[in-house]
Structures are given as C-alpha cells and as structure tokens.
Image 1: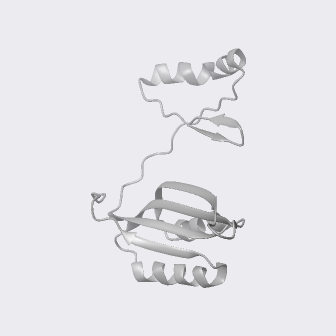
Image 2: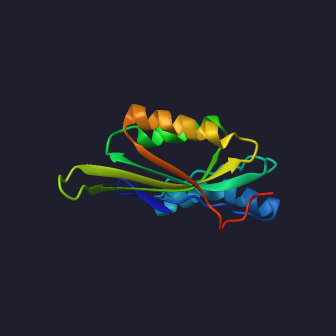
Image 3: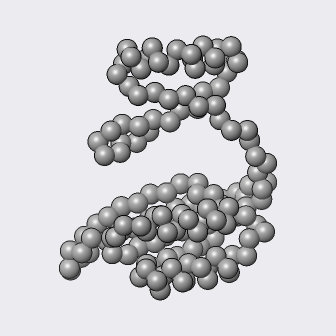
Length: 145
C-alpha cells in the first residue's frame, strides 16, 4: 500500500481455489462500481527459477534532480539485479538549504555477476551525474538458493 500524489494505491496477491479466484476476477467490476475504486485484475506470470544471489545495500545521494532513480534502476535491470526494496527521500542541506536526494535500496546481485564491473559502472555514473553511490555487501542476510 502506498499513497502516490495524493492517491491511495494497493497491490494485493490473492491465492486460492481456481473456481473461487475466477469468481473474484469476474466480479471486480461490480466491486469497483460499488466502492468507486479503480480495480484491475491480472494473473501473475509463472514463477521463474530463483538463481543464487548475494544481498547488497545500495545508497545514493546527490543534489535533487530528475532521473536519478531511472539511471540507477536501468543499470540494475540490464544486469538482471533484483531490487528487493527501495526508499527515497529529499531533505534540505544543513547550511545551504539545497534539496538533497537520498536513495537506499536492498538489491539481490546474481552470484555469477562480476561485482567489480557493477562498481565500475556506478563509478562512471558518479562522475557523469555527480552522485555519491555506495554498494556494500549485507553480511547478516541469507542468500537465495
């Protein structure tokens, strides 16, 4: 659940007997009409085998400007790195009051991936975009099998 631009959003995964799920899928329009909610139903895609990965924490901070999340998430997507969670915030710099953007994400890096190549790509982004990026291995999480 989240609020986006003043609008409440909820994503819900429902499991159960096929016939019961079909009833829900066929009746969601009526529920939307009764409640005034915009409701969409989508069957989940089939599960992909989970590959071995290592948990890392990614942090980034810079003067706030558009495109930071897109730039970082594009790199992760191209390398098939899963973003498990992400939090962002902006705050005023202590002396100047300049808006500062901060991102913290927990990511799952496939074990076959060359982590030094990822670090090198982030180093390029740091220079190009003037973003401070840190990537650290999480030692207290279990790894996916």
